[in-house]
Length: 87
Image 1 (cartoon, rainbow, N blue to C red):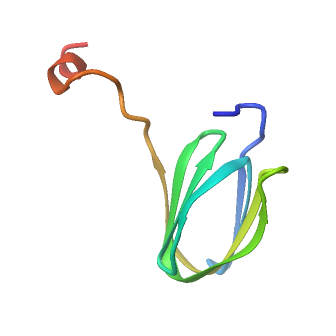
Image 2: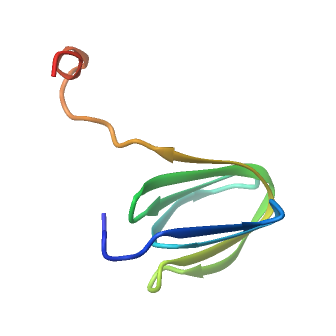
């Protein structure tokens, strides 16, 4: 992950989401957008989502539609279940 890009979110009226610090658009559908950011993977869930701005050089992304949830996924730890359990 590129930790040099500042990561910020701004959500207006659950209808317009602007972000900085985005390094990759992993997937995009009407109901979910998966983005890699400088602080981890971000999943945006909603309805009628549309990509309005995409500038990965600057790390800027804008999404419109109805935003229902924003979730960060934690990176998976290496090793087996038992190794992680007893760390």
